[in-house]
Image 1 (spheres, rainbow, N blue to C red):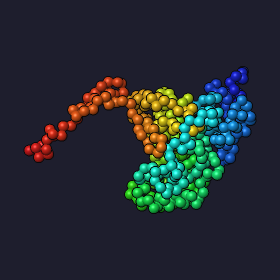
Image 2 (tube, one colour):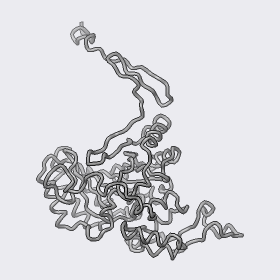
Image 3 (cartoon, rainbow, N blue to C red):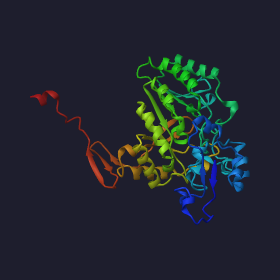
Image 4 (cartoon, rainbow, N blue to C red):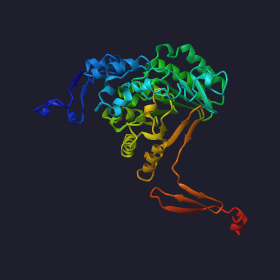
Length: 399
């Protein structure tokens, strides 16, 4: 690995610089021929600030990392162009994480002791009637600084054991109303192929026999470590159709040649890929940035699914925006770009209430006679209500 010094260092020959050096504060290079396991082993830990001329951030990073672990693999680290830029903010610890105590450690009531239902195993969140969240790992290829599960991600003591996973699978088996299992973490794709295969098989053997049963996987791997998407992994996933995957891109800089290839491999394997973006202050709370991101996702066959208002999780308050910013962005997307590029803007309601969609005020008036609407241009339109008392009967139409 090597790093090119910041732009303040003058050079006479542009040939000495990487192609995009003029746009960067620094340039980090790594061996792109390494497979994903090697990249994970060489991930960036808290000793890197000194090694890569980050001395002024070293103490702050070490202090925060004692509370909320830091982990960045070389690939994602190489995407950083600017200090305190959109990639930096997502992966480099900030002192704000421990100085601002606003929020809850478990704002969505995911832990079993915080759920309404009783006797739910530790790895299961059973919020909705017919589906569950199943946490199978607490490891990630990069620890997002805004993570809803900061309370547990990266803590070796909280990494799920096979015995706990078996209890969770038993819960799914005993609750026949469950037809949809969302496998998440941490990141499920941080598990080895054979282990992941065994886990998926156990879930599939239950869900496959239930009416309209499906498996979903939540992973940020296609964005933060696309090298993990291999032919062997795709072959494993294909065995358990219908299987869906939701990934997590937050900024156009994350759309690279490598991430395009990874998403393409998944889609070519018959796996529908959706994307969940979190609205983050200083990262993507900008109309043009969000539009570019959504259009870029669609161009690589990834369907924008949700745009999340950032959860009020302890240690991430500095990422939250005013809710009106999200509505402004949604309004700027709807009608101004393809409908495929417009995600559903939601708040995952604190206290375990589930996702609630938000829309700008398109409905101006609704009565028995008509609905008055406002389109993306701000123009008003009227749609007549059906008058059931005046609707002709089928016999009258035939006669």
